[in-house]
Length: 444
Image (cartoon, rainbow, N blue to C red; front, side, top):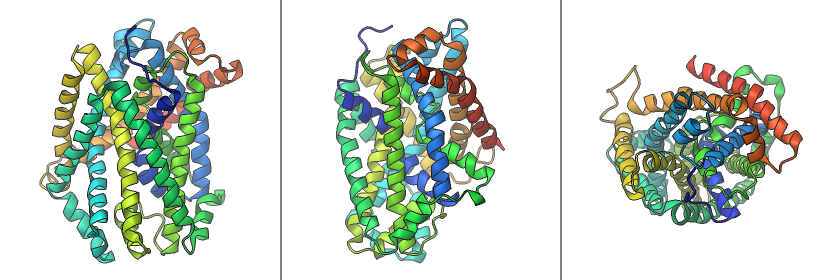
């Protein structure tokens, strides 16, 4: 155990960093189009249930492993496994590989938000008519400008990472998260004042289970899992920086609640606007980069609202890239004995190289495929459909069945025993099975 391991300085820092890790493009980009495609209100109810009964216990599991070991995710498995530590360390190694791969293509999408923020501020986004938005998006993502923004987002991430745990990660999160929530509130109020907003709210908050299908249930379960970034070890590495006074269950519940609040607020921002201007709520991934810019263009002060929205997306994506980077940086520092500055540079070079391949997947490398997929799609598929669900399933199984029960109970104290038993039950019987369903469904 590392006695000199850095710690988050304040409780606000704990919440800001963990919520910042969870909140990302999955909340503000993916959640609205998933909710739109799977029934609105009914999807929302199922999503919240999955967060409560699966998401929070798995977050607790990662927090427990992180603080109990005070190590990176590779070292955590190897140290906490009572026997066969080296075999379990492979799970940590998979998490590190997944974080690098995800960061590679995630940074490309984060770079798109910079481009759209730039165009919103410059006013050029408003010059594109409705018919031309899809072509404009394809033109941008197919060019080298996309690569430039990918490098910029990784450079911003690297500057923050160089500051270390307190002066870099915690300080950045303490500033970024309040601004993010302020933008959420401002944009939500604006959407609620739009004509026809009531129809959007009715769609989003009124459940209709009569048309609910098995695919809708799986979508809600998958969104809950991916929204909290479970299975990677982001919560585990942040848990290793918690002080002994941090109450893990309360922190997990607060993180999940605020993460869900962001997703719901994103729905409040998007669905009233979509219904007010006659757009399709089930527009899918293009909802943010093609449909919403057209909606903003029809609003009074559209450039202002468009700029605020894409700034919101940028901040959300940046906080997530920080936590994903820390997984590999901590591993390089502790297992390979690198200085932090060296580890950050190595991580930047590695991810920037892979990120360039992903960015060019929409243009010059669009015809270079592996197993029939571009680099972007391959990294997305392997991590989202294989590595994350498998990692989440094994983390749940490990803490539920392999980890010494006394460690689990000690780390979760002073939580009431009934709640601890409920968490342990979920980690043994509920979470592994539910995540296994996500895993199998993703491969079909």
